[in-house]
Image 1 (cartoon, rainbow, N blue to C red):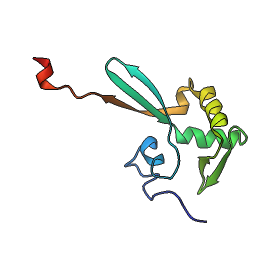
Image 2: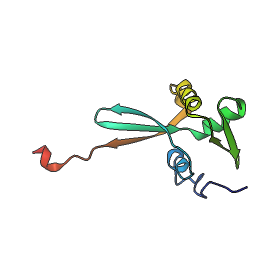
Image 3: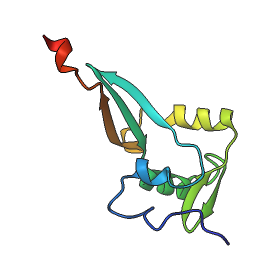
Length: 107
């Protein structure tokens, strides 16, 4: 079976959010705003692996090299994410994005 995962997928050099973007799949994140920053929080793939092991019918997926790849249709995936959106364990690796302040606009 062909592997879709980069050798860096489980490397300590990458967080889950960055690692999952190395495969040819959609990436999703919770988005919120805090002050002037946009916050992106990716799914915790350790949580996802454990959740799917305990609840294999929770969302349509396949396993490749012991890693889940979500293959659900959009509506099923949206329902799954919405159901777990408030579960702090399901999401981690917050990335804060803020606009770089132009020094000229400060004067």
